[in-house]
Amino acid sequence: MKRTLYLKFVLAYFIFAFFGFIVVATFTSSMTLEHMKRERADTLYKEALLIADSYAADLYNNEITLESVWRQIDAIGTFVDASIWIVNPSGLVILDSGSQPDIENPITIPNFSPTITGSSFYTVGNFFGMFDEDMISAFAPITSNYKVKGYVIIHTPMTELEASCNSLLNISYITLVILFLLSLIILLFFTEMVYLPLRKITHATEQYAVGNFRYEFQVDSEDEIGYLAASLAYMASEVAKSEDNQKRLVANISHDFRSPLTSMRGYLEAMLDGTIPAELHEKYIGVVLNETDRLTKLTNSLLTLNNLNTKGMILNRTDFDINQIIKNTAASFEGTCRNKLITIELVLTGDEMLVNADMVKIQQVLYNLVDNAIKFSHKNSSIKIETIERSNKLLISVKDSGIGIPADSIKLIWNRFYKTDLSRGKDKKGTGLGLSITKEIIQSHNENINVISTEGIGTEFIFTLEKAEED
Image (cartoon, rainbow, N blue to C red; front, side, top):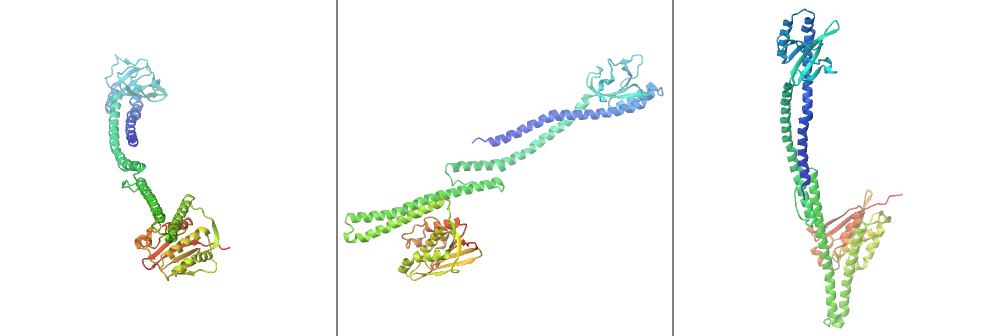
């Protein structure tokens, strides 16, 4: 399988890193430079206003000499690291902080126009060709009697701002690199906590897909991925159990069919070849008939189980008298009980006890439990069938004093075809399906069935039914 998920995640990480650097190099760079340019221009403009309102205004009002003004703006220019000009409206440079006043060789700015700043108070460029590099030039008008007498213009090179901007951007780049290195923790976390467990889960599903349901894997995590892995492992174990049960089912069916068929074939062949004399034919024909009864019972039980599973246990619920059903079931075993000298004791609640259930299926449950009790009871013993009310429930107990069930077999008696070692000698015609059918019927009613047994003392089966609602 291609590692597409991991590669996509890594690719997304590097794409994010690439575009992060692009953003810093373009948008962040231009925004930082623009911000610094505005701040620098604002500072220069404030200085220009101070000069225009003080020294330059005094100069135009003849209150201070040209030399004195030059010394002042030269000092200010050195302080703010800029070049300060005083220019008249026609573009004549009256003073330049960078050079001493020279009245005989004046400098004129070609095509000078104060409108170059537009709606702003500064402009960026070579200032009408006066500089060989881009400059920030901040304007402040010199006014007197509400008339513009000239302008204070302060210039500073853009290279200084760009150098400062690049220094800040270098810090941004270093910070960005550190952030991306730290973000590798996320990639490592994804690899350890998500990708590697997913790889284990994916490999496990591949193993399960080819039928290897006994493949074991472990994901040590308590989050959703750990829950997914545990659920998948549990599902595989259940499927494996189901597969084992299916194999065991086929083996048990084969064994239970083969034994009587082999016995029947052997007796019939012996009668045909004369091994069994004619006077004994009637006896062994009876044996063969008993084996056919066993096969018939096994086939009917299998059909019942199949119908219970495939039809989803369709119930025909009605209100009926469970006491009468118990009496009828007990009466059907009268002959068998007489032969084994077994008595059935009925301890029933009330003359009539209505329950809501499928009468036919509950009758089958009672038949199976009483049949089991008779099979494993000793001669001259008693079987007790009792009903007990508990709120809106009725408890029905079938108790014998027979051979009991070994402790290690109690949880297994509900499995299909299961027979305890103690029962094999007594239950010659049993199929091992009766209790499986019984439990499925009770569970389909959303009720419970339990067993209490002590080996050598006896067994008690208890199941519940819902009482019918009183009118």
